[in-house]
Image (cartoon, rainbow, N blue to C red; front, side, top):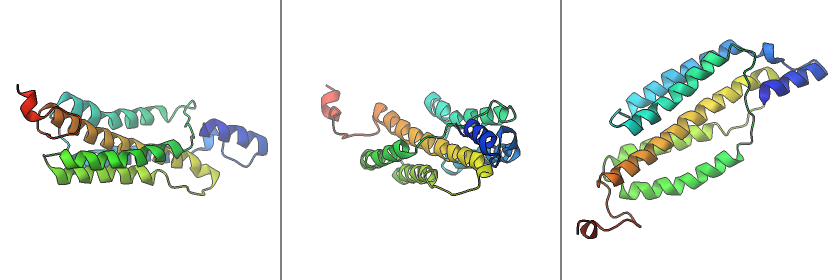
Amino acid sequence: MVYRRLQQEGQNDNDGPTLGECNKTAIVIAYIVALVLWTAIIFYFRIGFHNPIAIAIIIIPYIIFLSAIYFIPTDDVFCDLRENSFFAIGLVAVLPLITWYSQYYNEDKQRFITISITAVFVSMLALFEFCLPRKYICLLEHVRSILQTIGIVLLIYVIAEFLASIASGQVTNVPGSAPAAASSK
């Protein structure tokens, strides 16, 4: 937990930021920019409100970012600083899955692949390590959280869109599914 760790370190050696010294205004601005960026992504990729599942997926970042803005001014806010190794392993596991999905996706394949690549790219941006002064660590962790949220939600959307296409019968010849002729008998 970054804030609490920084607060404890600041009390021990008197050279690190305490909880009250983190630039909360910059963090709030980062989340406002994230809200605008997420809205732009929705319009750019034509992510529509075509079904309840899509709506639920689309509003996840809004809920996360707005709750972060709401809770930032309090002194009880904290970040959980964890290793990104599990996240990186997850991304590596998702790449073959997305490649496999794209072979069977019959709708807008270019859009599907573009959203998938964007999701992985944005998620990977969160994995970069920066050597920064302690006073910027809080902001960096929030920016990483924003990038991971956007990337993960885009991946969830792509997978949900693919599964919805399978359920509606628009995707055919997927290994492990019943052949079209056999399923109509």
